[in-house]
Length: 261
Image: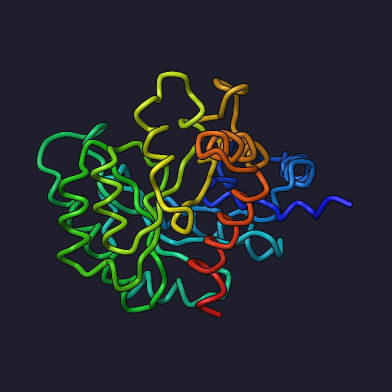
């Protein structure tokens, strides 16, 4: 008899977004059909955090984060408030936070200061960080070092940077998470990074409802489709899907759950 499939975790999704309104039952059924056992529902703004938390409270296999995405201009973040919200047992991470110089321009010092606030909160509550970086890798890694982000670790989510950036994050104790982008034909450089990241630092995600993997590219992404991401990373590394699933699921729980319960 073949061993049971160890299960996959979608380490980053946004099930509170309008695309999933009234569709949670089918989303969860698709997860079951694809062997996806758990999902981390990610906060992007404090106004929407109660809905994210409600998802985690309602379902044993969902977790939540708390934080403000770098795209949300104008929202001031108090580290003490983040620490207070993170006390809930289903909140396992601080974020999504980080820097994004792609969509916004001008003086982005507010973005850097807010990133620092998240790192300080994470260090205070001893929960890992979920970090977003786009066109800002040098500043992201620098602020992580300056603020001691390595004390709590976390994940560089939806990774699209170079191997050198990955190594910079790994050196600070962070994990690297790959999304559906790694399945795209034009992602040759990223595929090489997926081969190189140590197996004990790998995670997989969907970033639902965005970035659906091949063969669903262009459609609304869902947590169940993280299996395609895992299949591609396993193929690139020349290992069985079961081995990749066992590793990434173990990594997720060691990082976000078991060491902090």
